[in-house]
Image (cartoon, rainbow, N blue to C red; front, side, top):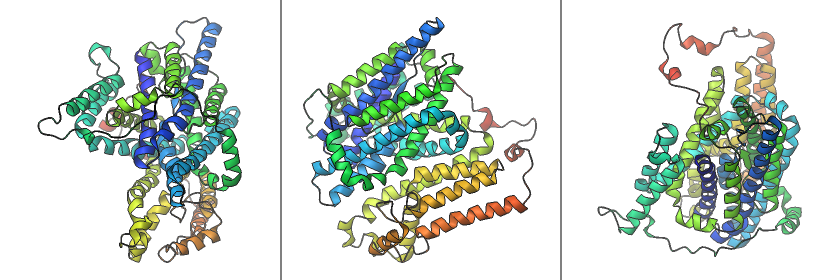
Length: 562
């Protein structure tokens, strides 16, 4: 039961956050999200967890053991935010700005989300046979650095804003999460921490609402007038309409691959790590099969209208310690699949306030960050820190974008074109650093890790790859819409958007030239410079026999639920 509630609530919170982001932040029609996107997304969890359940039974029969624990699978948390905030949501706004009605714009954005999910599933399936090679090529600091950037800036910070918007129920629920899941206190009655936080938060939330204000305070949200669709069972079948759309809109869909594929690559390497973690706990699953199953589940989700990819969860040893075997993944598969396809997720979405579910994501963000440091060699810590910088630019750009680039405000003197040149140059720089920030984080952290290891040729190659990507706007796009295009066309678009004069030294040619210059410098240093000493320079921060409180405070706990 503990394992089931932990895995099930993680997935339910993912569905709630996805719906809340698309509806609350971008203005998607609620019925469209609940009836078109959620069923297929839930199907991916159903298929993946059912196959993992079957794999656990097969392993138990082969080994003659009765304590085999199934690999946990669910919605990928970074993808929930990456897809909602960077792919589907912006695609909806751009379509609406072109004059489409809300339902038409939602369908357009939905098809872009489907395209990215199908591409991710295909990519992961192709990666399955060469999963070991991928792990050797991409250093852990590069991949975990980009994940940590998402964890801190997107998974932790943005939900925290939701919590602080209604702080009494939000912070109370967050306290239960932190004391039970982070500090590891046992709740009364052995209640799972995630379930306990939701129950306590709901009691406070609905108690304040029912009492018409506690100690004179206003009630949460003042009540909601929104109507929700009636429960309806079934799965969308969008492939015919999607294919007709894709033949005319494939170029626009390709613009989002720079966001979708790094997220997919992260789940591949994460799946490899999860498989090794399960093997260390005594359950040895074939790595290629685990990666292929998550790719298959993602493909099937996209084929039936889903928009969020699935991934193995980091937490097999924790679920094993809870006593979970195969029933917890079976129960999760049936509950989440039923919620999406039988339609009772509508009830869950109505009854569970987002403010009491969001603390679960704070914990996940903190766990990802902590595990990134634990799993990364100490000498690569600077690479992890560097990976966060582009994500900070994304956060600043996100907060300013609606005001500065809203055409309806330009006439009032608030728009981008009305600002002085120095301000436009600064904001344009932030915007370019934010463009494709996940891929930028991965490349920068990878290159710095290679430099720290003394592999200047590999670092030079990484920077050259970044230069090619920046030339076409995959990263550092000079345009608000972050479109992938030829550099001369991008410069023409910069002039049309009044961005050229302030950013004339930051064209795609300048970005590509800068990265090429880095590669040349590194090549020259590698040829004529002196290599570093063999010792780890970070060890010089400690003298033999001295105590490092920060280091001593870190302990590797294999029972972590994530």
